[in-house]
Length: 186
Image 1 (tube, one colour):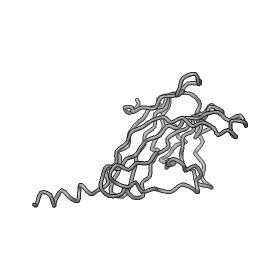
Image 2 (cartoon, rainbow, N blue to C red; image 1 turned 135 degrees about the vertical axis):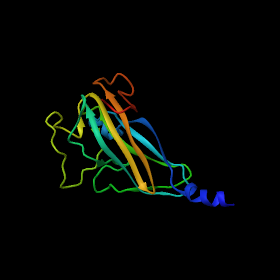
Image 3 (cartoon, rainbow, N blue to C red; image 1 turned 120 degrees about the vertical axis):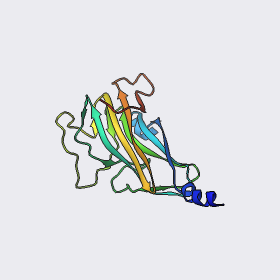
Image 4 (cartoon, helix red, strand yellow; image 1 turned 90 degrees about the vertical axis):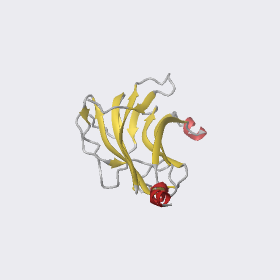
């Protein structure tokens, strides 16, 4: 009938949803012998509940805030998908439909370096703008951070969303940080 035919184009579109978690990553035996320590990845699981693939999907870090102000170093940069780590590896991805998902890396806490590394793609020849209060960005010292992330694909997107990342210089807790949905920071 008429109702079904008008609904069908909507049903077949990609429909992106997200959830989030912290995943521990242990060093290999060889890395452990070199003194490497575990790290923790803060990840968003981007799922396509629609019937057709979400094409050319990118996750964008739109803003990072700390201590009540925007950290100027971060200015609308792409985030790496899981298993991408070099700017030359980075490319938008397609997420198939019917519940297929991929992981978007937001940050990594490296115990060896005691830093939160925001997983932004910086192409060769580009560099982050220097913020005097955070000169090491994208590596950030222990603290409380608010990050705003949007996910965009052909014919689908996830509304920009705020998350809070909080971590202290304390690896006795597992994981040594929290990663949760947040309201817009003041």
